[in-house]
Length: 547
Image (tube, rainbow, N blue to C red):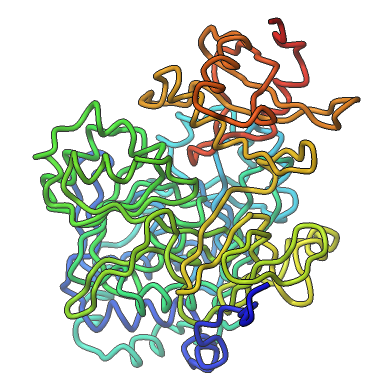
């Protein structure tokens, strides 16, 4: 142990928690911000035809819609099914000004998982649109499903114009009073999201007004996104990053946001960046990888930097991006349970130099505490030692929906256990090694599935594929306790893997002995591997362990 172990990294949590805005209501903050700059263009929707709205007009339309939802959706929680775009923004905002809780449902899940989410949320009403219904025919739509396009078509244009004129003429506080906007949210539920379900049935994750406002304030404080930027947004609103960073943060900060409905439409994203002069893009390495093959660097030259998260950035990826496209690549980290942003490498801003460190996910957001604990004993570890990352802060949720057992397992002495293996260096930079669930314990050593995947992909020239070609998981083994299995979409033999990994000086313990050919590597809509799907494939087949 070091002489000064520094078991807790503190970025001013107690002082940050005194911010009075954290006791407020999202709707109140949004209305005051949009009223202060009613003519500022804030949303560009390129789902079909290009639609651009100022903050004042967006608010005027949302206030008119809220009158309809007040009659049509009597329950406090209301389901919302939209991809990234204006429809989802309007619906979430119009529900929130009524003090309702939007539940953005993941329409890429199987119907059983969606039905479970609807039942546990006690949702009776869902808001969507006919084009969405047509694209997800297997969605278990409840009887009370409302088509936003039909409801919006019935809105009085005079009513919207009258709302807009009041927004133009009146100060924000008076607008809030005239429309009855709630101003006290605090720890009350503001949104309900569900985990990806990669390791089982999705868990409900309620986020409070305080959680979301805190994370917006943290992003604002570190200048990761400032109002002079234009954000390229395509992450779905059921994704915690899409919900907080590309929905609520622009509304409370004035950040202009360009929205497209899918992260998979690489060419359309590049066209939007070029035409709208977007300066920042956020997503996952999985969604960024196709840019190398499908996009000319000159198309996205307006980008100053991109931020990758949700999955670990592969070695060499950041350098390749910067060399190819000229914009900086910054890696960040977050979880749905933390609303979501925990840390990020930060660009230079004015006189402030960039705060980046290769291989890290950056320094901790303001107002948080972090520590690393031993996997077995849960004792706090020293600087640069690897263990489970645990967090505290106003952006950390309070517990899972109606699931006291999962909540108890997730919190230790008031600390939220992320389930990620990490270390923190002497300067406060966080290094994520991977999910604990993506390690196998072999011979007393924690063996990383992700690192083995990366090495195999490099050895067989598979690392530039648009989708994963290989994945590694663990299965029970009577003799060793656990055995590594390679799932591959191409023909690879155990002998080839052994030969090439040995040549790379990979430890013998890390070399998988079982290979299973599969049609596709199961992935979630976020681009992450579907760990439950991997385990199911590995268990369902004998695989090839031949020599």
